[in-house]
Image 1: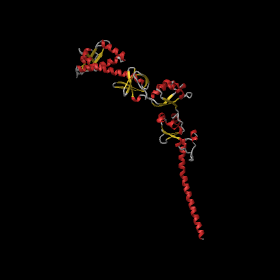
Image 2: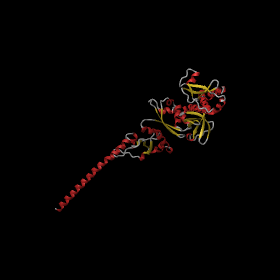
Image 3: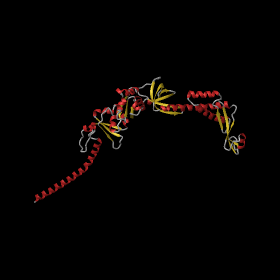
Image 4: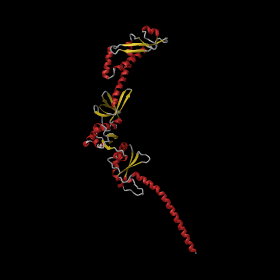
Length: 411
């Protein structure tokens, strides 16, 4: 080893960001293994690398003991004190045992180990650098594509976009500059692997954060996002500040803010709806632009509900191929079954038909209507029994009257 090695380590640190101290530590560990392997030595050895001159020194490390059992690992107290009166039992002595040809043999043997450590260090540096971009937007350049991935270069690495994360209808040509969402960063054996996406709902969230300062600073919060990439997205927003309209804030003046997001997504439709704590109102908002008459929850499954809409809004509520209903279900977390008002019969507690205008205006609560209807059914049973008893009594009275008439006739 020589100053050339020191210069090489300095260049490695400046060009690839790998600290010289880490490489020297790896080098010393590799040289210890090389010495033991090439010289059939089993004793404890220590290798020191001179970072200034590039020289290597190999030392045999022996423990000071009273009685020596293995002279490769131990040295007597008497022999140790001949070198220095300060040695005591349990101390360790270093004796230089550097072979004359160690520089050539050790360098050849250690080369592969050193390169491996360098690659590991470089992988860790890249992983630590790019893992901070996870769940963020980056802008890269399309390098190439195949049947499985689109390869996008960003900085010193090549990211991959799987088929499932590619937007329907988009084409990715070489040298195209595109913005993608970093969905996952893995520290694989072959090096860090960065997966990016154009279909992840997180892309929409980050784009809104860039366009709407109120979202970035927390004044407006994105509660949930439901997305069918390339076609339509629903986003629910809220604000704890009563003076802030969350929907209007996201839409922006003349729709400028939401339009910027739509343009980035190549025309994907975006519905911004207000989030409210009341699930009835939230579900109704999620089904926008369809009008909702009532929402009826399942007694056995509170996350399942029936939504009643006007007949003329049924197709609008369901959407093209059921898209509006699917997105509303994803956005709210409820399983939604949509029914037209003509297929739903409402009754009050007296088993009378209910005017749908009262339902639409909110004068009649569907939950209470159902409960009252059930109570009305229960109330019918004792009434029926009373009617039966009354019928039996009437029959008895009729029979007695008949007998009396017959007796009078005989007389």
